[in-house]
Length: 206
Image (spheres, rainbow, N blue to C red):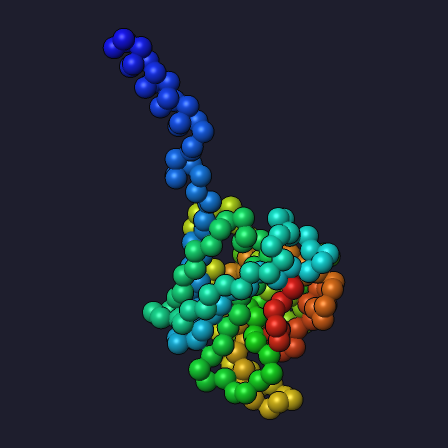
């Protein structure tokens, strides 16, 4: 009887372990994204994942995730999100010194140009002068499979018209891998930039 009891307990333990995986096994992989910001201490950075109907993002559900917003402190902010949701992310930025503008600024992550023989490689450094002259780019991140990653962002002030105000110009330098946004909504394909910047009034659809 003792031997049978031991065997039964061992068998039950094996079945239980198979049927109910540990928390570590069942946990969703996550990515910690550190955004190192130059020239915008006290700015607020947020993330969104808004997917166009014709998006190339995988997985393409859910269609909308509205992430948290954090204030830049010590030149950086950090977000931790599910790794599978990193593709299609866009990042917003607002500055304490910006004027009253009718949109939220998005961080441009890619180089000019996005397509064709003029496309600059990922990892290209972009100066302020170059950023201001860019005519196209994308705020839609291609995502990562890594547990940790760093995106370096530079910020400058630009004067925009209609309304007449100071606004942030924000771009990744070095650039990171991006995707072209979807064609639906008001977003162009690729994105036309004004003084090197772009933004949205609800979300940027990737």
